Image 1 (cartoon, rainbow, N blue to C red):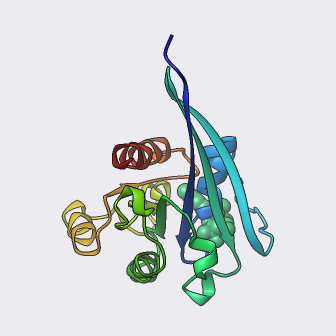
Image 2: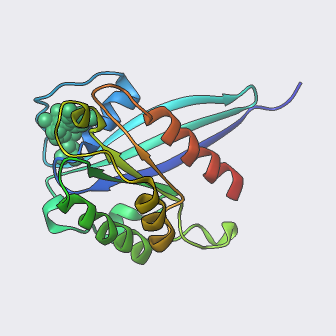
Length: 185
Ligand code: GDP
Ligand code: MG
C-alpha cells in the first residue's frame, strides 16, 4: 500500500478592489455566487481540500484581502510562507490591468519560495475575471497575444479568462497553479 501524502499550500489572492477576488474564492470553495456579497475588513481564509491523486491530498489555504486593496500593496506578514498566488483583474475595467503589474511586483519583492525549494519566485497565475460580462456587451475579451506578452514580461506562469458568475476556468486555473507548486518541490 502506498502512503498518502498531504500538502498544505498557502495561496494569495490579490488584485484591485472589485475585480472579483472574493467571488472567485467563494465559487471555488463553496460553489456559490452572489452579486451583493458584503466583505468584512481584514483578511479572510478559505480552505479547499483536493484529492489530487490516489496518494496526494492538497489543502489549499486561500488568503483573501478585504479593504486593503486600495493601498495597492500588502505587508510582508501577509505574504509570509505563501507558495503561490493569483492576481485578479477585471476585463471590464482597463485600470485593473495596470494594477496587475503593481501587484506582481509587490509579490516578487516580498515573498520567495522556501530555501529548500530553491528560494526563487513563487508561481503566480493571472486571472482576467468577469468574462461573462463581455458576452453581455461590457468590455471585451482579452487579446491572447497581449496576455501572453504580459505574462512573459512580468513572470506570470499563465493567464486564464475566468468568470466567478458562470464558473468558467476557475478549477482549471487552480489545477494549473497546484501542478506548478507540486512540480517545484
Ligand atoms: P473583490 O473586491 O475583488 O473581492 O471583488 P468581489 O468578489 O467582491 O466582486 C465585486 C463585484 O463584482 C461583486 O458585485 C461581484 O458580484 C461582481 N463579480 C465578481 N466576479 C464576477 C464575475 O465573474 N462576473 C460578474 N458578472 N460579476 C462578478
Ligand atoms: Mg473581496
